[in-house]
Length: 344
Ligand SMILES: C[S@@+](CC[C@H](N)C(=O)[O-])C[C@H]1O[C@@H](n2cnc3c(N)ncnc32)[C@H](O)[C@@H]1O
Image 1: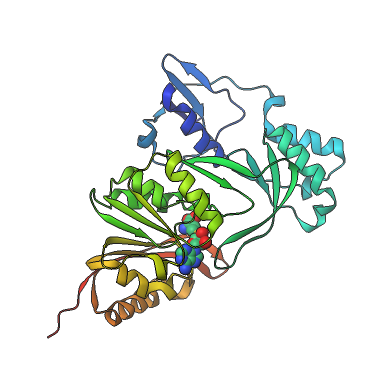
Image 2: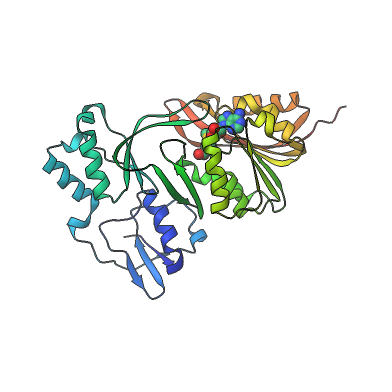
């Protein structure tokens, strides 16, 4: 019966992050004990607990909720009442702020609006959208359809950063949180960072707020994402971000950065831009969709060759898999440090 104990003032933030990952144990009661809140969870969260000042509580048994309060039970009850077979109803969902995202099977499409109404009202969402065909194109635009409720603009809290955005118009991938927060421990205070594909600030804002860099240059091509990026810089009161609207190839200053973040699957086509953005030495964080059999050897060889072609040497390289993307394809990251190439 795992239970997390967290100070009252941090409970809201932790709870939101746990709920976004569906980790709160809905069968037991969240309980107040003195200045602490005890939260029952179903599994160990991958978010660092120290960030919320949370710790594991042993030996505390939390009272159970009545069965009727368990949302899975309430969903099943409503589905049965609506005559929708449980086998075709979504078993999982994604929540971004107060917008719920459902994937609905082809055989359940006839019930799409009824499903949205049931999930939206039981799970307390403002709007329910269905993920029609995922995220597409160089601007990474979502293909979502609003099924229930009103308005797809929301504010999503992650790692202490607030992201205002429109779920139906720009992407946010909550799966990459470890990747986004991990870098913040490695960039040192005073560094200059270039985020070539800033979106609404997924890398820029955690970095700007946690790592205390001197400046983060945040390039974004899509005017809608850029509008949210600017809004999120204000919302989080980040004073060290310079947002740049346009193609990073045109707008990113040259020879200024200690770190370059390339959070786009087309990063390979922009390696020259990354090298140009760096001072003589620095670190590039490179993302790509990589065939599994090419990870990590072919990936590191390719990046080493690109580095030499840009008159640098790789001095260190770490590779990691963020997630499996499709059968045989992984979302891979290479973080590599480069220095000037010394001629013999
Ligand atoms: C995939 S999103 C970032 C996702 C983020 N890495 C995450 O983990 O959620 C990439 C962003 O790069 C922007 N973009 C695409 N090509 C660009 C370019 N040439 N210059 C600047 N931004 C670009 C897109 O509009 C999009 O907002």
